[in-house]
Amino acid sequence: MYNSKIIGLGKYVPDNVVTNDDLSKMMDTSDAWIQERTGIKERRWIDKSTGDTSAVMGAKAAKIAIDRAGLTKDDIDFIVFATLSPDYYFPGCGVQIQDMLDMPTVGALDVRNQCSGFVYALSVADQFIKTGMYKNILVIGAEYHSNGLDKTTRGRGVTVIFGDGAGACVLSREEDSNKGILSTHLHSEGKYAEKLMVASPSIAHWVPEILESKNEDLSYFPYMDGTFVFKHAVIRFSEVIMEALEKNGLAQEDIDMLIPHQANLRIAQYIQKKFGLNDSQVFNNIMKYGNTTAASVIIALTEAWEEGEIKEGDIVVLAAFGSGFTWGSAIIRW
Ligand code: UT7
Picture (cartoon, rainbow, N blue to C red):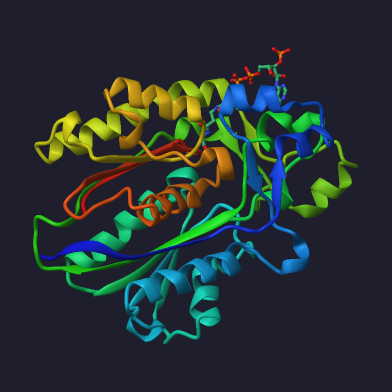
């Protein structure tokens, strides 16, 4: 059995900044409401003329990660791509990465676990490396939310939260069993699937039915019971972080850096307080990017590393919760 460790990180966010004031021109909202309830000041939304999509952004982040790993695309053995906003209904974005990066015909897998997508994807990649099946795996999280949101007052409870972006890492074989990913922990509770979802188009509710509804059918916009999701998020985040610590015989004070899924600054602050962490032990960038779902943890991890906030030997905890419900954590000795 091997361990796996992250040897290269990259991120890409669109240039187009959308501030809270910009949103208040589209719908009945305000900078004060959004900042107070979520901590978000601005987010990036793709300018369509750039040609960016989830796969395109993922490819840009992936190139940086591969380069920083000191590898070339020919060294990558497998691709895992996490997104809830794929370019196509099918196939998934992973195969587009294989093509866009002109990679050998390696396998590509898409993960559909929304906000927990990157943690799930990392866990999948970790298993392939542990067994010795692959040596270097590209793990990507990318989201193109902005083209699928209801940008009227009707959608304000959801739309103001979400942003576009991508992050990627190269996960590689590590011989030292005390280094790299120590463990991952994954959970789901499908009875709450409809608390945070995009219901259609689905195969049970296809495009002609939506068109026939003459705009009364809004099932293609994201729906979220925000308060319900919030309450579950704070509980599950705490549980899954604790589970990771206990599994490795570690205590709360051993955490050097917690990277929570950037869902809401209030959730992160609650967790920080609960675990008695100071500001330098929790990384947040939701203020700049909003909630980028499957991209959020890997964008935040990349930025924390770029800013020198993560040092060799640090205990880094990744944790996420979201639609499904699904949640998970990964604990890493950097
Ligand atoms: O990433 C996946 C996981 N997602 C999450 O973890 C998100 C969890 N939930 C949340 O972050 C919060 O529930 C929200 C930020 C989405 C909403 O905050 P809230 O404090 O739960 O607000 P609320 O939904 O209870 O709405 C309070 C009021 C309502 O008005 P009334 O009924 O009190 O008159 C809403 O209509 O705020 C209103 N409202 C807004 N007002 C201005 C909702 N959205 C907006 C808005 N601007 N954008």
